[in-house]
Length: 548
Image 1 (cartoon, helix red, strand yellow):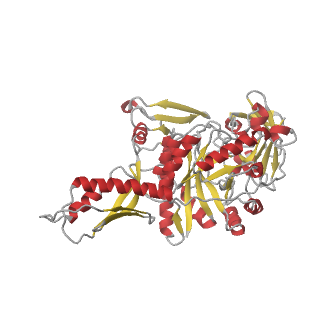
Image 2 (spheres, one colour):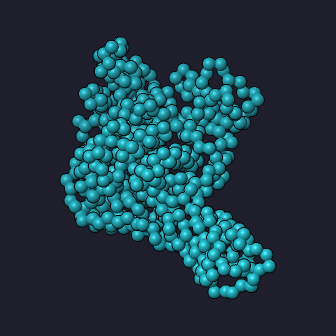
Image 3 (cartoon, helix red, strand yellow):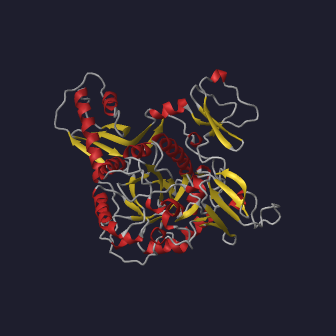
């Protein structure tokens, strides 16, 4: 049976804990340095705290060391990797293959999407280098994922299912470095793609101040079954800079959807971690940050009016609350406001409003919003008591005391007392009393048994956690010199599957579509005058931007 993991982002250890509590089978988090989100850094000690919590549920923790590295940093990187291994980190997500030349501990390595993993040949090469899991490029179709799986059946395929989409092929964006010396491949992306541009045709502006490269977001909630059948084994939510409310809501939504798919294929798929999630709310991904959702990640479209969150479309059936935030598009610009008094708010006819802040929703998510419980069975015998969890891990406690016989039937009382597992991570599915006589056992003793067993079982789960290991032999590989060093002006600063011509109904592969700009050379210009020429590789459906 194939284990499927839902992989959630964690800006901090506490957010990672909430991700697991709301249904994640694994989380990925940045360390103190060399993560592709420089603003999401965590100490080794904090990551260790997350690891301890995750492993109770057999959930995994992956740490990102997924930036390009400079030679002077390699020794420090090696030291960090050893520290991460020693606290029990399950795997590292890396971009720079020169890490393979280091003296590494036996920790699995996953190939970051920043390696631009789009073909079976690339994934096969990474598998031969020892990568058990590869993070695929965001823009692949179901068919392309299936083809990779068919040719690389033993490699775990990690697929992005939700969150922001990069306009460029993964790892192929040099715009931030070229303009501001802030490398996206060093975790310091300035998000040039979210800025406003003028579109130039033959050097003359034809569209003014639009977010022409700002893609809508990814949402694969309705396609999880297709992804699993295509060969995906890890479903990844983007968002290591997102707040805890976002992670709670989106993780819960995908966990619910994944459970439904697995229930349809009970002999083919199962969840990769333990426990059952009990939610105190109904997830809704439109209530969390989103720019609208693309219809097809292989041919993504942009929200050219705004790079900000649109939220959920307002309908007549939706109930507003005082303090809610609404927005709408007016003359191509996003306008936002707060509803101070619902009674006096009158929508303008014909205007589509969006709610991008729901006060009651925010209050609800600010409270504890989920519990995750591991089922246990408790068996009381004459000389010992056992607590066995759903994974077969057992804690046992000998019984040395002797008890008086009771005047009333005691089995129901013993079952009730032992099943009160309260705020622990366990939930008593069965309490079986195998006593030969009707003993009276004081509540204080039953409470002590219950407390001792839960502590022992938690310790036993950590002790028996199936830590995966992978041996490494230092390997020197020839790698290309990165743009961050060469600043080669002949290289495109962006290479994209997204196409402005397609976005604006000027696709050259559709000659029947009339447009007066189809034959004119196009360029993009920022407000500071920086201009990018556009090159269209229609055969491969790629668009390239060059800095003029």
